Image 1: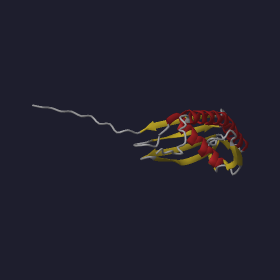
Image 2: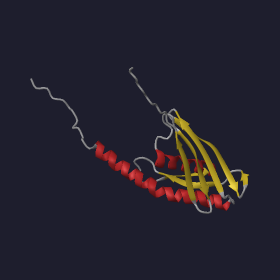
Image 3: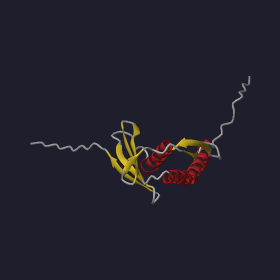
Image 4: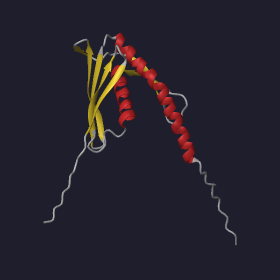
Length: 159
């Protein structure tokens, strides 16, 4: 007696397919980042903002934006109510997803993207904290970052 099974052939290419998709996704994200950043800085400048300070804190596998402070000169002001179009890379798609978001959401998105880029896993274990300073005139974002860690020093003495 002969048994026959309809076993599908195993495709050994998922790793390379994943690598290709990951590379395409990363390239699209890198291409979209300057455009989204420009749209945000344009909106901040149009509203007369000079600086934005974003504070963050994370530990124990979670993290969040703690505060967003917007300045026009020396005065602290409300975040502009305007909406801007930003684009996001969507896994497995060659075209970005475009959406209108508030200036506050665009600031948060940029901060989280930059944290992921510079310090992936910043929220894990003892975590990290710090702040971003957006200088609207210079169109720069400066990150002041502090890792937390636990240190242990062991000594053993036999007398």
